[in-house]
Image 1 (cartoon, rainbow, N blue to C red):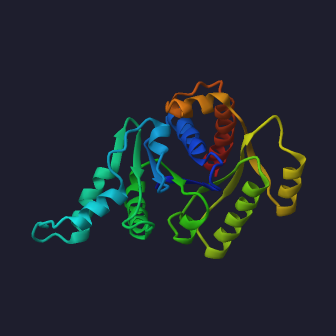
Image 2: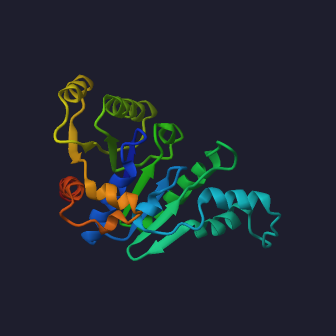
Image 3: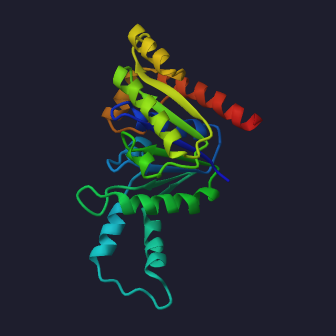
Length: 256
């Protein structure tokens, strides 16, 4: 049984960077194998991890629907499609990546989401950890792509809007009765200190951050040059903040 981690929050809060740093911590500490899942239609987790993405769940489905395929006798369409979908997995040492990509139509992600959830259910047992980078907003929650989660990392940037989005996500988790064992709030991209107005808003909403991740010029530089965040040095301010958080969270998990 894998330990499932999902990352959610408003767009532009640095969710993909946080996801990559979580994976970096797991890799550096030998907590493998890991399945990274890019559930954002605007897929860029592969770039952040330095892993090539040649096919996505969405592109395979689109191609499958456009082609007239002679399915082998005795095999269902679903079984044949599942074989094809194995091509959406990018493999590397200790880390595999599954990328959803875009859906069948201009704005349809329904079927890829159903298959993604099925893939996660069938594959996750083969991995020690599954880490999912979700799309911006709360749509993935309402479609129940994110469920049976051990740790939901709710990422906000240094803004009132980001904090309010976290509060709405927390409420939606309750409304949908999703199976989420624990939630941890991360305030990302913080300058020298969190502004008093943001602290006041978090107090009003009953939000207590589990981690404060500072702005980090090295993360910005790596993103700009499309260098894998897995290669960031241990001295990176963002790396140190995420490492400290994960050490605390997983120590609780191990002791529990």
